Amino acid sequence: MAEIALILGIILTTLTVVEKVLIIREKLKTKKPKIKKRRRPRKRR
Image (cartoon, rainbow, N blue to C red; front, top):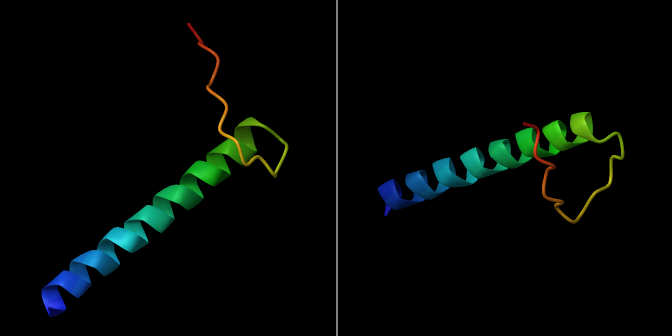
């Protein structure tokens, strides 16, 4: 059980870190801090 708990903890921490990084990136891209709905990025090609 200890191993499962450890794995779950690692997954949760990684997910939270990824979420924070994505939120920071969105804030940098669009200067509006509160955006709940994800808009598809326009194609930059």
